Structures are given as structure tokens and as C-alpha cells.
Length: 507
Image (cartoon, rainbow, N blue to C red; front, top):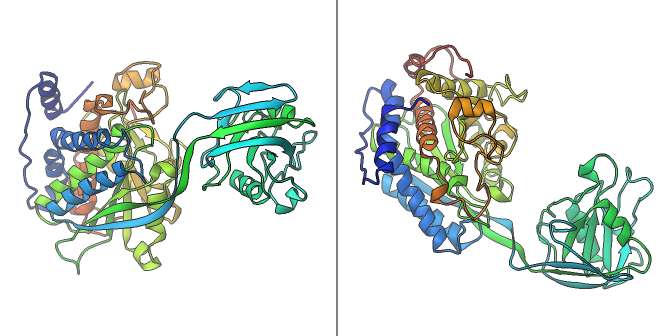
């Protein structure tokens, strides 16, 4: 597969175990050449240095960098220190969020009429944000609709728990309102625990064992079961025991934001927001997800700050609590006034750039391949990435705006967005093997959201190429001579990138 000469040099040196240090040239005038210069300045060794630091932080903090843990705080400190040293103005934006993790084994059993022990992941799941503790008591069905499950409101209203016996375990049915409402109403009624059974109508997703989130911490143990097991537990005389060990509480975390001022504030266009989430899942160090995105934009920020100031303001956002539901980027966007929102030209998002069995995926801004377009100008952002890779003989595939990463809150308020992605749990296809190499039938990231997402889980060639694309697009819009997101006609920067344009096909 085609790689740039620089990528081949770095890969060969790393394979040979050599110590490789490449001098990163400063960015200089004229600004029309800035995209290529920043791309050359952003190197795989520079990115790897940040990845190694994030791995060391995780190793020193129980193997995780999840928001709400010391590992995340240390990660935020590291990023803030690097940004400040590079000369960016740093803001640390704190916010509260619901933190959750399981700290020990759980148990679920029927104690009457026929004692039965149930298996985790086969018969039941502990629901996210379940409380910690033990519930022992009679199982009391709450407004179930077993004969006609299509109209289920079980547990949605406090009145559903009239005469509910204190200390009993509430048996609730999925449907109509959020799981968290059902569990909170059960807790308020004096239940010692809750079981949420599937709804029972439709396909397997409404009958089989399912996982889910309560959305916020509750104080009682809560598990989920299939519709069939729920029906068994609904029989008169049933009693059960639930035991969970969790941490489920409101904690504080933060976004780290670095601002690079334009050369002339009076003539500057809108702000280019370049983002990546900084947190990992609780179960692992998150070196690919999303140490790679974090490290790439941190390296881009450092190198961009070394040279001539950009035409437009550039803001680098390192978002917290993405793994808890895009909470950091949502908080950031929600904290802005209408006027401040209007000053953002576009968002570039980089979430997972180094998957070991990688693909070269570009967000489908115009919706031409996946059917869902981003706000106006998102297609032009997509075209910038496609032009870059096409000019280097590197094939791409589209990936949808599916709401799984931090561009979501931006496009929700009409801000155009784009970005790159190397793939997560999806299985590599024959077409992708033909385009990118790799292993057919294996996940693009076999360690996605697992403890094995370490430094050994990085595809260096994909990371190098995608990071170059991220640097190129950042510079294109940082040095755009009309306001990003509003460009009309061909500006100097647009002409600069036009030389890389060929037939715009996904090969």
C-alpha cells in the first residue's frame, strides 16, 4: 500500500529499533504553503512521545485515564502543561458528570420458590449507574403488561408504586420512559433493588437480555433480564437476591482548551475548533481510543504555535467524559452564548487515528455515501480531506455522522464539522483489505474499550497518514483568508490545496 517517503523512513527506523528524532521545521510565510509545512512538521515520533506519556500516566493510575479518576487529572495536567509551554492560552473548564464503575463481582439469584443462580452476561446484566449493595426480598411486579407488551408504562409514574411493600425488589418492564425514571421511582417507593425485564414485543432487541444505562446514579442495585426470565420472576411467591459492587456518583472532570491567537484580530475570520476526547474508558488506558487523537492534535498545536501566527483563531479542545456520553463537548457547546457560537466557523474531530487493523475513513460531510449530511459546509470539509489523500495516492472510505463522537454537539447547533477515523469494533471487509491491507475478518481495533488498548495496540502507518491529514486540514482552515465555513470563491489557501485534487472517487 502506498505510503509517503517520510512514513516509510519512520516505519523502517522504528522497526529497526533505532532512536529517531526528526527536526520539525518552523512554519513560515507565505501562508499559502502552511498546510504542507505543518504536515511535514507533525511527525510520528512527536505523536508517539505523547502516547508514551499517556501510557505512563495510565500505568501509574490503575490502568485507566477515565474522567473522574486520578489518571484523567494527570492526563489533563500533561496536556495543559504542553499547551502552555507552546504558548497557547489554556483554559480548564470543569463540570460535574455521573461517574460509574463496577468495583467487584455481582450476583443475582432466585431464592424462592425454586432456588436458581443466574449467570452474569447470560441471564442478567448490571445496569450502568446501578447502586451498590445487596437486596433480598420478595419480587413485586409493578404494572406489567405481559399479554400486550406494546403499551408498557411500568414504573414510569410514582402512582405505579401505590402500596408497594418497603424492602421488596421491584420487577419493572422496559417501555415508554427512561430506565432511570423507573429505577428512581422504585427507590423512592422503598424498593431495596430493581429488576428491569425486556419489553417483549418486536424482534430480539425487545425480547432478549439487554444492557442499558440509568443515566444517573441511583442508590439501589439494578439489573436487567430478558422478557422470558422476567415472566418467570413475575410469578406469585418469587423472592430474589441481588448483590452489586459499584461506584456510582456525581464527580467533577474538565475540558482542557488551548487557544492560538490570530496574527491580526481585526481581520481574522471565525474560530477553527480542533477537538479530540482526552478520556479513556474505565477498563483500559485508551491509547488508541483516544490517546491517538489527543496526541495528534497536541502535536499539531505545538507545531502550529512554532511558526507564523494563523489568519484565523484556532482552538484546540481536549474533551472530558466523552465515554460517558459526549459530556465534555456537550458542556462546552452548551456553555457558549449565541454570539460565541456564531464565532465558530467549523469543528474538526479526531477520535481514534491509530487502530491496529486500520482503515482510512473520512466523515461523510455531504451525505452522498451514507445518507446523513452534516450542516452546510461539512461537505467542503470532507472534500479537503479527500483532496489531500487523493493527491498522495491514498484511498479512503466514507464514515457516517452517526453521533458517536464529539462533533455531535457541534452539528446539533448547526456548526459544520468533519474529521478522520481509523475504525473501532467493526470487522474488516475484503474491500478494506484491498484498499488498506490488514487482516480480513478481524476488528479494526481488537482492543476497543478493553484493557489491551495500550501502546502495543497502535497501527503506526495509519496513525502517521491520518495525523498528516489532520494537520493539513487544520492548516487549511487556520490560514483560510475568508471566514472558515463561509468561504466563497477560491482563496489563497483553497488554491494551495487545489493542486492535490484529482478525480474525487473512493477507490
